[in-house]
Length: 266
Image (cartoon, rainbow, N blue to C red):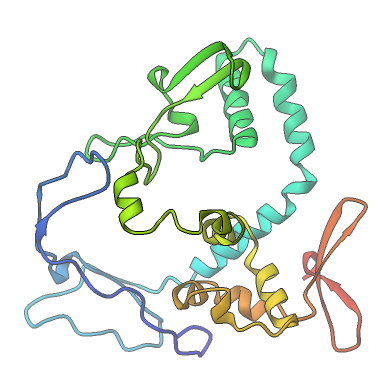
């Protein structure tokens, strides 16, 4: 239950024991996955909801009542929405620190520049039993090549060659052709916005547009995506506007009396 509304259960299925496949050159590839027992399972459920009973003779590892995931998603988009107020200052700061002689600060501003310009994920350290994927802050010397000039590109060229999350170094052209992945690729440049829609576009923008023009929610989000973004569906009405006054983005609803109410004042 969430705010007295019954919610569908998420992925409740557990993979049976078998050989681990993984993605790319995963260090655990080929190893046997152990059988999952009730003692390995954490149940996350509402406080007023009946806790499912484990099989006889077993117990759950832990029972939680964590309902903060939607709030974390909302806070993430709120922080991104307000970034425009600070981005110029951030850029000014890291450009000023380019010549800083302290290595820690110099490394930080280079990372900020890459993330801002490319853009890239931050990247984090991986354990030995994880796939060796890297990104901005975990790049190594072998991932970068410097060229004074490349005729087809220009001068002072930097080439990045590394394994990122869910990346493959070489495309499987044969399988792409067999599965018709190449069909309609020009059209997909305009309409294949799945990743950007979920990761970069505030869902309240999509929801407000959908409600204003009476577009079915199924045309915008899949059922799984819709369930994940219920907080945005409930928050944004058809009158949820996005204005730009002298560079300031203001989000607000229009109340029953026709008065504008900024979301920052809520």
